[in-house]
Length: 229
Image 1: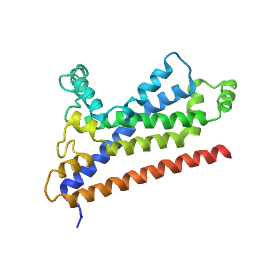
Image 2: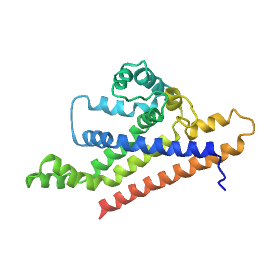
Image 3: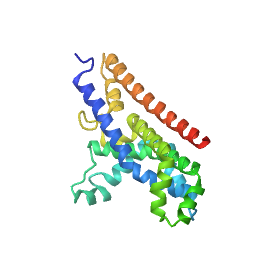
Image 4: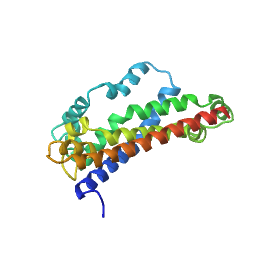
């Protein structure tokens, strides 16, 4: 018999779905932006870099409020997306969007550092032999930087798993729809006798996050070892 209640299992499953979706959906954008910041010089690069990292220093409720104003049912972007049947308001997809934004800086930073660490001479040699920029990117840059790319995705996943402020501000705390692990723990704090459930959910969150961080560190160490060899 499972030691978890049905509501607890629902919150755990929803958190994993939100975190996986947030990490996977933002990965292509993270790779593109990480490559741009690592390989290109352009006017306003420092500003772009600062904007990417802005969610790390902003209060999460501010990010959630901005999302609510713009992507809510009355927001400009929200009304536009509604014409295509896309709705983020009070749905798990909104939780994934908020989590993706909060974890995006960690992803981009890891990917950027990984690409910067790759040997540019290999890319230049491939270009000299006639390879197109796209071919150089997906046959040279990506394979060499993959540990950092995976590490960035793992860090974004771990951040998304624990996101609370932006998510609850944007999509509220609806059991079975937007109530993630963090929101469920917060809800249980208001319930007398909820300590045992809080401990179970907290241990799950700690365990998953710890595994994600260990995986990220292992990938980073492997990339350093590959560079040495």
